[in-house]
Figure 1: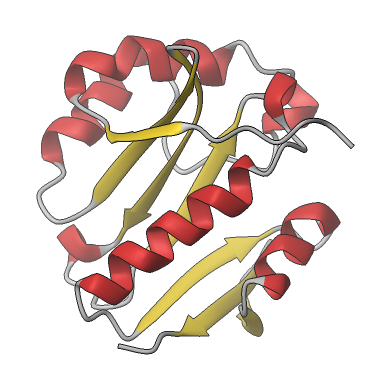
Figure 2 (figure 1 turned 90 degrees about the vertical axis):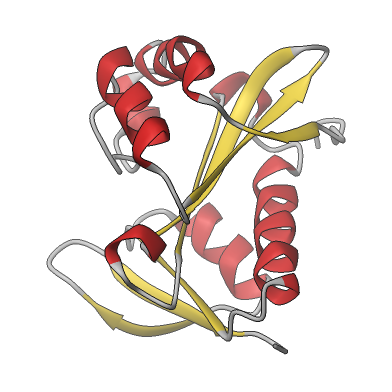
Length: 155
């Protein structure tokens, strides 16, 4: 098992779009294949961050380096139940960062009185499914490519 990391978590700003874009585009195709919430080019990442009003994006840093990010999206489109998404640099995978991101996003939702979270995951992504199930998410449906999972919060 790799040594766990306790990252610094901060809100992302449009000024960090280049760093996020480089993190995503530097990843092997097979590793990033299950993560495609938006186009990874810097201009699009910057536009995503600039447009966000209620949606939230956080970065995870270790030693000042961006090692991952996570988000809650859907609020800006009028949904009450946000969609969670996370991406961890492959070099830092297996160190508890996805679990830490999920815990931070869940805590934020609970503090804001949000009643439910959702996410989608590819059926073959067993490691991610295990993390989500351990955190209390359950499969509630599917779409063309993904399993839809939801978690009812205490709020």
